[in-house]
Image 1: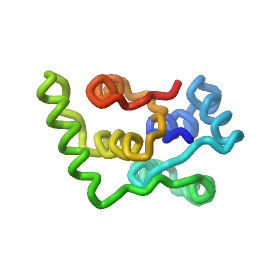
Image 2: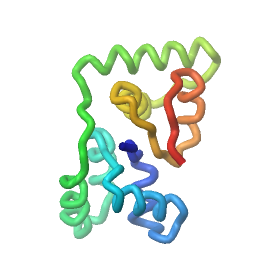
Image 3: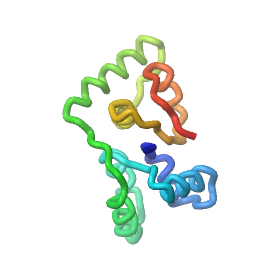
Image 4: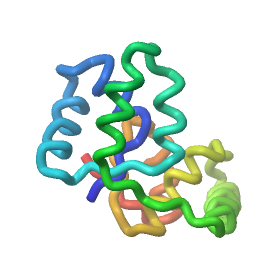
Length: 128
């Protein structure tokens, strides 16, 4: 399983021929792509209204990683450790995505470079 970040989904839907879109297409074909609620909630409102039903249908068929109610302690810990190393601050949504990937021990596929910094602090595995 690979947790696919919002940035990759945007590239997939807007730039279907990009490298990231092609990689996501392979993950989808192999049944390896997964999402979490935060990623879906970031993605859907930004889509054209006419595209939402198709995307919702696609998302409903993907494995969904649970966001545990105690994830907030992980989020705070990642932010604190990052700041202590002179990195960040990072947005709460990005910290939640990182914490979910870490909690479920799955790599994260993202185009956002700040996850490289979060990975330095946490050991978050990034998928390319």
